[in-house]
Image (tube, rainbow, N blue to C red; front, side, top):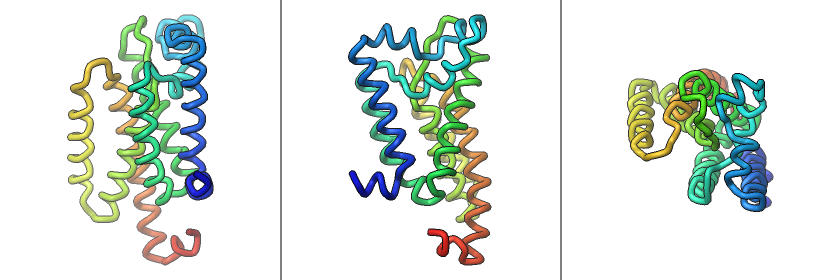
Length: 195
């Protein structure tokens, strides 16, 4: 674990945060925690509880939801963080998750309660695919892979496909930008000096 914290502090910090929130859910009960922290569009739009767009990122709807997101956050997070660094990795995660939540806010019914790190995870995937697409000069393949991944994950019941789509789109845009940055630094060898 010390190596994870040392080399991938952003991923580790996010894992700790979602674990703490999940432990809180277990202690007080999922229903109560969801009412307190999840994104409930009615409360966001008509009661001004805009902070729910942030807290919803860290709450999960059950053990399986949490376990899957924690696994993929670790597996995908260390990969992207190792390439772009902690700061850029966290930017991808939070902007993607927030964009997915905002998109959900204006497209899903008012009484829907949503939450989870999935928007941020899709952002990580999108960024990784876009970076690979830029570096390999094959953005069309990257976009096709992103679309395939989105469609596969959209068939499961109870998923917020709007948040997934928003996170993926934001990640692709950020990843394209980072890919251009990486390509430039690799060409002038400054990447190897920094890392």
